[in-house]
Length: 363
Image 1 (cartoon, helix red, strand yellow):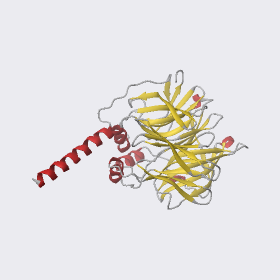
Image 2 (cartoon, one colour):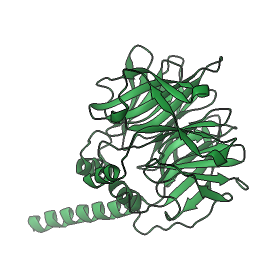
Image 3 (cartoon, rainbow, N blue to C red):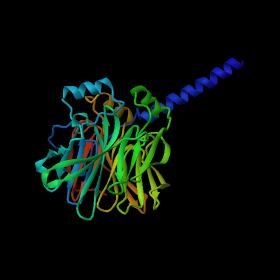
Image 4 (cartoon, rainbow, N blue to C red):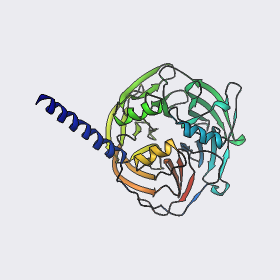
């Protein structure tokens, strides 16, 4: 009798886990195509355009050539076949027909052949000096790379490399000054299978860190997938996307850079990287069907749906959510980020194409 009861309990637990996993992977979910206006693919030689940030003058810096530490052999083979290279591209919203142009990276201490750019953040001072921070997945481990953007020469001048035991499995970075920044450790395991189990179980090993210019300080931990970061325009709030379990987090900043939880908003989709529009609202690239996104991450040839959502913000709080773009993956696979400038939008992907849209209607 006891054995039967134990078997029944174990069976129920296994069934609950299976149902929960199927729900998490969104097996029965569908997407419907719509755009905010006419859209077209931007020509380019990159493999993916994972993250981007736009300056007030419309110049946009875009990372390309991401290979995650947990990438499968299929991904590595795909990148080798297509002669993958880590790049930072420049796109000018004022001249969209010019497409993208690769920025030249200069600096004797930087090895571009070992460059795997991921998240990006820009800091512009009062004298128009633009500092760029980029997450790098290199062969020796993850690092943060600091550059100076020289617009007239279309160059990035390498300034400094940040390595530390607190820098483990990076995803994104958000600068609050020229020499200080927040960053996310996405997960713990870099092995593909263990990383998948870490998300599905979930183990919640992700964290948010802050570097104040001298030392590293852990802000929060216990996240399943600590992903994209962005500071509000007034720097009062830090925004963080958590694609699993589909949460958008707002943290209120203190004077010393520490943050406190402020709002947790259920977006019901796998959000990735945030950017800000002119009014301080948040745009997010998203993965609306988890299992297809995971399949695409394992095999770049397999399409995955794309989505862009807009979160209307007021004093750090989400007041409304609208869907700006949705695609079944045939036009654009696995969108990660979207940047809005005037009446146009640019959408990037993990390892697919770059999309430019005219924005004729948007709530």
